[in-house]
Image (cartoon, rainbow, N blue to C red; front, side):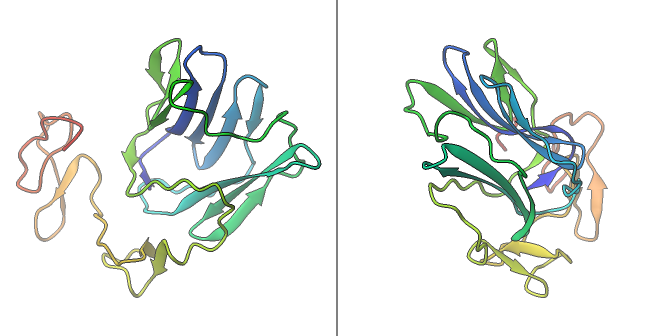
Length: 196
């Protein structure tokens, strides 16, 4: 991901509004929130860098014997922080059926309104039911990366270096015209929708 500011990366919201899991960026930190239990894992560690590509991951490891969940955060394959005390959420974090919840990348629902919109780029989103601690199949490190990046996708895909309101003009990132309020294409023509 390449965040440009605060916002929610992912949410899993119950249709009845009773509960949500929300993963967000606040400043240079990441938070994990579960609304029904009024639980928020917000470590006092700055590790998110705005306007820089980075692999960020969250692990929620549930231990059935103790009925506890331990959260861990990773950046570029290295462990950043683990929750010091396990949390008793009362159950494992489950991927509920589609008719019970909706999943949103880049925001969360609050009383049927989309809130906390993420601003930035997300190159790839992966979910696993297993704890992942080896990220070598996801990323490679310089000098295999283009554009001077320290990490990039394992296949060497060239990630863009321009921000959402800029385009590559062949020499450098140039600002989109001021009337392009949704960014622009490489020929400086305005992007018509958020899908392009």
